Length: 139
Image 1 (cartoon, rainbow, N blue to C red):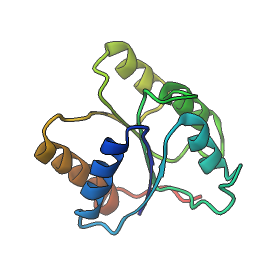
Image 2 (image 1 turned 60 degrees about the horizontal axis):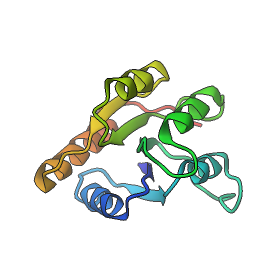
Image 3 (image 1 turned 90 degrees about the horizontal axis):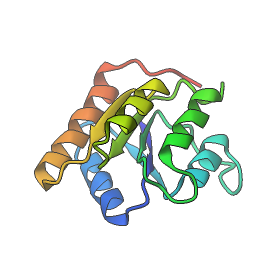
């Protein structure tokens, strides 16, 4: 399974990668740090011509240059990308962010846990669910 992690916080990115490495699902991870780079990666533009198509996207909402809310809308409006599952992984507990994310087609909205063990358990559970039990769309 290939995961695209869209995360500007280096510490959170490192923790997520470590958690992904502990799953029972063979996982490859690509990390981008802002919304513009995420869309370039997904569209295989601007230095990302050989980017693999991700099976799953972990998307933070609070990103530099182009926020995750806008990225989600652009993914869902792009016929080539709209079927890729997008999981919001954020610290925002705002009802407006939750509602907007689901209104624009997020597959789920995950709050980043503050506790390390819980963070790892969340990432493992999500990836194992999507990797073992869900039939993912193909390109």
